[in-house]
Amino acid sequence: MCVEVSIDLVDLLYRVSKEEREKHKRSPSTYWITDLLRCTLKRDYELRYPELSESEVFMPFFIVGTLVHRGLQGLLREVMPNDISTEVEREREIVLPNGEVVCVSGRADILIKVGEELVGVEIKTSRSDLGLPKQHHVDQARMYNWLFNLKRTILIYVSPDRVTQYVIEDSASNEEVVERVISRKIPRYEWECKYCIYSVMCPYKIPSR
Ligand code: SF4
Image 1 (cartoon, helix red, strand yellow):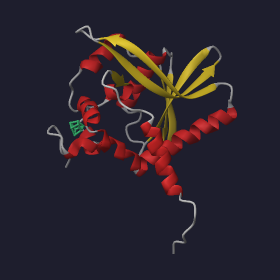
Image 2 (cartoon, rainbow, N blue to C red):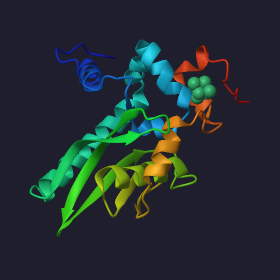
Image 3 (tube, rainbow, N blue to C red):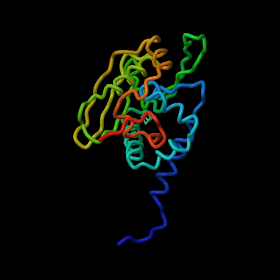
């Protein structure tokens, strides 16, 4: 039997997630690192119909991801308060083959100071530990190495089956970043459509069985 209490924690979680999302509004001249790792059409849809993607914050899996991020960031802040920064944003300009200058922007979950070196940390929550590390996550770490000029980024996975980490030392090049910005790969991976909020309107959707 549910007893009514005066503190609505569910409402609080949704409000915090929504406020967090609203801090990061899209601009047509800026590409997020995540745009360069997925179906290129999703960025277009997000610019035209932002309301649909904003509704994703109400998905429980999104809330779980936010809590894991906040938890690990808070824990590291406790054990190494002087050596970590969280939610660090950076932008780099690149020139496209047609001469247009665009901005590539990203946000590192955590940067840890190890001696003279800065090491990136990218936190991933996953429903299972099949196929780790995922190629698009490895590419994301490579893109962060490029954006923040890092030698390495640690990909840490938190799933019900396994908590594990992979150290990614490879970096994307300027050419690769340009190629990803101008790419029209729709979708980039077949499985994307199954999880895409825009699949309800997209003519390119690849239906899953
Ligand atoms: S449904 Fe598939 S092809 Fe269409 S925008 Fe989403 S991921 Fe891209």
